[in-house]
Image (tube, rainbow, N blue to C red; front, side, top):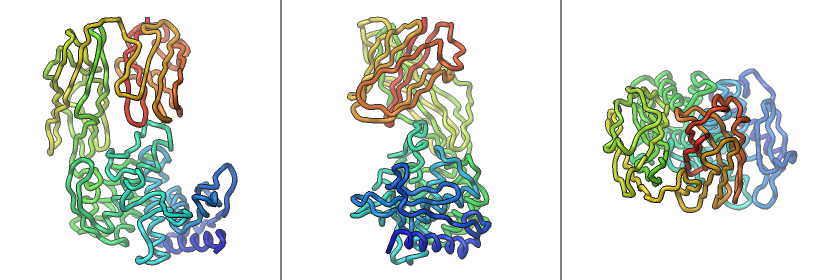
Length: 468
């Protein structure tokens, strides 16, 4: 079958699916013409497919790894972006963008089941575009394609990174897996160590819930916690408050790491420091509420407050709404050239774990050389700043073991962002910063202590710098 003929058929199937299943008249629900371009070759997009607001284009493929990108699930995926544009209009960035991609994966898969039958359809995305064996994503097993199946779990892409609009194609795996479990059921343990058992409700009921959530409840800036909250409401609208469908929606969200109560999670359970005696080392700790209900952080207790502290100090209680996070700087200031083994206890209103312990290990070094220029927190990544202290010019040098996207930030001691640079990097590079030229810098002519961070896709290195 020629690519154009196949794409035309797949577009018809997508139209028929939305019309017959939901009574929707085309992607805009107003009879909009579905315009498609087969064998797209412009702008090096031969190995891609995309929705452009009023038409969809499908790459011709390189003929080696990929054939035509006009497979049934890919066509369903792209036209479903049009459905999203004319309903929730989810912003294509960070979590809202991941939901945007996920709804297209969900309806791309359901269109394939609709067109080819339940015995032939599958839970893979884009498997038919490969010349050999492969797929772009898997709703059944996202980790098989290096996508997360748990919110903020393994393979979760840090949304601060600008690559792929904050990881929209990767982080879609969470709602993708939720939809698979809701449809088919399943049991296991998620990346939070929480066991789950989900009763499947079938593809038809799961699709109805997802569609109602997208069309009637979600907003452009909705996040995962909103998708969870309003999918429950959608299930109750359609099937009743105590229905199996509503219960399965809840258990499926808990299976992918979004909980029905409040749930405090920390980015680390161990922080390791090393600092000269006349210096301090800063590391950040993130707290996130992975539940849909609010919680309060009620107390921070250090077992050794003389050598470990928080910057800036927090006014308590601090409320974390569902899906919100709090970023803290933990500071180590040694007095002796010895090892410090301490802990930070965080108390909260989390009903499951009201107190969490972060272990702190600090090494004070007796050789004092002023503010050190070189810092290496983990083998493989080198990070240096010179001069430090500085007056006007600051040179930031780094060496990466492999290509990555990095973000360099400078913040004041309260956490206010003064400078940010995101770029693709590899090997050894140096960034020059002229202090007085930083935009919106209220400290252009004043001295003080600031925090400089280098963020990669896997870690964050932080150093204190001093402006003279």
